[in-house]
Image 1 (cartoon, rainbow, N blue to C red):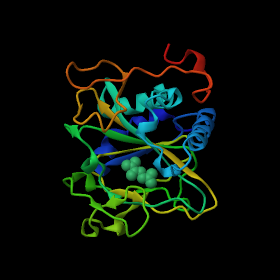
Image 2 (cartoon, rainbow, N blue to C red):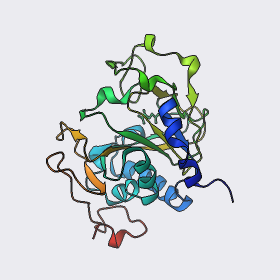
Image 3 (tube, rainbow, N blue to C red):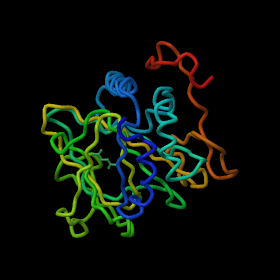
Image 4 (tube, rainbow, N blue to C red):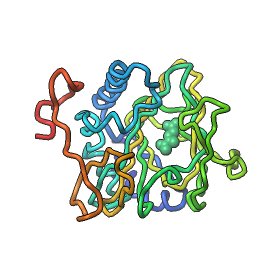
Length: 265
Ligand SMILES: O=C(O)CCC(=O)C(=O)O
């Protein structure tokens, strides 16, 4: 038997504290990976005009498969290791890079974009394809989770996922590490770590789902602009966030998936 997720989880805390990121392979099964890929295609078919790197949280509030995916127990068991048992979703975003055409993501720190108090949050990046340097895998600069959050500046000189990024003077690219994942694996990263990704110039897709998990004690300060708060496991903290009801599957309106008829009922 190969290395299990539990074996990998045994050592993540120390690695995460030291480096600001960690990778865990083989978290979800191939059938769910296939459903995730079908979901990206379904979203693209239903939202013509939106680039595949921009399938974001506004699309998820009435999407039962999306909630089913981010609330998968295997993913929540991983998230729990980082943020404890009361887990909510702050936001989620597919960054799917098509063959030969996937946009780069400039170096940035996530926390600079987020209205969270306190900044207790962990990002899970779920690989729906093998993610490698060739197809534009995520890259991180280990240790930079210790740096305070900097201002992110608008950048339109190069087409890029966030249309912004951080000043090059903060970034020592020679220290960057590639986050190489097999489909079904995840990485976890800290809101302060400097990270980004190159364009996809390969003939293969690079589909990934970002999932921003918060403990229920973290407040989303501007919920109108960030409307995808769901309580996923455990208990809410009174007076902190208003959570959405889990969407129920309606045939013809939502993407069908395994277990859709009973999901959320
Ligand atoms: O997927 C990418 O290219 C970048 C991901 C990212 O910036 C993030 O997860 O915060």
